[in-house]
Every structure is written in C-alpha cells, then in structure tokens.
Image (cartoon, rainbow, N blue to C red; front, side, top):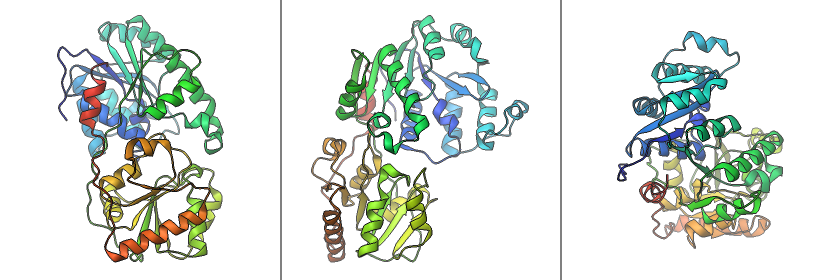
Length: 394
C-alpha cells in the first residue's frame, strides 16, 4: 500500500492496543490499527506512541517500521531486565515491550510524558488513535501543549447501546473514552454512517468534525482446508464465542433438526457458560474450532454452504463482508451496517424468528448440494479507498 499526499504532516500513531495484545490473534480493531501503521509508514514522517506497563515509549519512523515487521512475523526478542519489574505481565507482551525499549528514541514515566513529547515531536503533529486505547486526560493534555491535531476513530457504541452483552467493568471506561473523544478531538473518524449517527446520539454536546470512511477489507487468502469429521453441506459461524454473537440461536436449531454440519470457529469469550456447556457436551454435527490460522479458516469458509451470522449488534463486523468477498452465501441478522455495506447480497433474517432462520439454512443447504450456491459479485471496500479519504484530513 503506497499512498502519499503533498507535503504530508508529521503523524503520531497510537500503537498501544497492538502492543497490549502482542502474540494474540488479531481482532477487527487490531487489524485496523495495523493497517494504519502499514499505510502511514508510506505516507510521510511517522512516530509511534505506546503506553507500556512501565510508562510511555516513543518510536520514530525506523522504529515503527521495525515494529510493523515484528508484529507481522510475530517475532519478538528476549525479555530485558526491566521486564521483570512488572509481575503478572504476559510473557509475549514482556518480550514486545523489551523490543520497544530497544527500538525507541525515547521513553519516560507517566509524569514526564509532556516533556518527552515536547522534546522529540514537532509542534502541530497529527495524533491518530484508532484502537480505543490510551486516550487519557494525561495524553490529551500533553498533546495540547505541542498544539497537536487529534483524530480519533470510534468503531461503534455497542458498550452503551447493548450493555447486557458487555463486561460490566468496560461500560464506564468506554463512556469516558467517548466523552473525551467528542470533547477534545479535532476529528472523529467513523467506519460507517450508522456509527456516525450512533456517536451523535451519545455525544455530550456538539460533535467535532466527523468523517465517514468504510474500513478496507482485503479479499481473504485461502490455504489448505483442515480435515475433520464434518461433511458437506456444512456451515460456518465465525467470531468470538460471546453472548453478543448469539451462537445460542444456531445451537437451538441444530438440536431440533440439523440441516448439515455446523463449524463454530472462534475463541471462547466471556460469560457464555450455557453455550460453553452445550459445546462441551459435543452436540451432534457441531464442531468447535478455536485455533485455526486465517488461511485454513477461509478455505473452510469458501467451501461451505454459507456463513451464519446471527449477531445481535455489530459496529462493522468483518465476517459477512469477508464471506461475500469470497462469493460465499451469507445469512445474517438484519442490521443497518450490513444494509449499508453489503446491500442486498446477504439473506437477512431477524434473530427473533428462529423458524425463519431454520428455513433459510435448509434452503442454503439444498442450494449448495445442487451446485447453484454462491453470491452476486462483490468488491469489498479497499484500504486504498479508505486512506485516500482520511489522509486528506489527518
């Protein structure tokens, strides 16, 4: 990805989220932060700011490039002596933070953040936060002292709109994050018009400038599909196994009358014990796959009878978009974000209507067996298009 603008400003990208999740599979938000790292390295002078377990770390362009390559390869160096000062830290994160200290141009304790930024960054630097992390009062205060322009991406307002599907301890911090972003940012980046409307509903006052730019979706690369006991036709449910994703609806359908095999692909999340107990009981024709690499997962998806996505709420929700890009039929809840991005490509069904879901799944199985499956041609939004839009303002 090579996107340039004339006389690009110096940019400061917050990379706190990527380091906090070092070594883990990417979530959707992780993918966005990494895409920004990759693109901004080719778009002008770039710095990286990270809130580590021992304070703040500042990278220059060379350090950001080294960090990108290490994240891409998931290759981290040995832990240094300082990493032993923080008890309970994940070993891979400790190695990642050790690498940061070796690569950085400066690091400091929290109280010295303003001094570090004043010393090493040009006034008017453009600060970009895409990860919902590290947008603290301390950071905002330090940025104001160097007259930084602040752009914040807000991916969704699900923690406020669907509190029953959130960890209770995450709701108040998100509310504070949203308030800080709406109050102090110069620009709010929105992944959809729906998200823009949701932010406006929750904003504590008039919004700063907003910009809608659909997130880029790279057509998934497929590898060799893993072997298992499942048979054709099979369906894929892709995403973290948590209450919001509504796997319960699919398990209820499969208990009644399995229309094929069901492959539930994703890590186990939180407070979903009923679903976990059902999966542990090994229901007939249901298979749980937690650790597949992306290329194998997408190979399974491409050969499936369809993606089943009964999620109660999504900010962007990549799986249906990725499935459509592969030409795989999609059955999903009737959510505004999919009307906006995918139009009439999916089959929509309200998750309150289990009979309709069961009927549509059977029809998808029959269509797949007849050899007439597949969807209309779909070109997903691209990162090139996204950055051509946002780089005019950040």
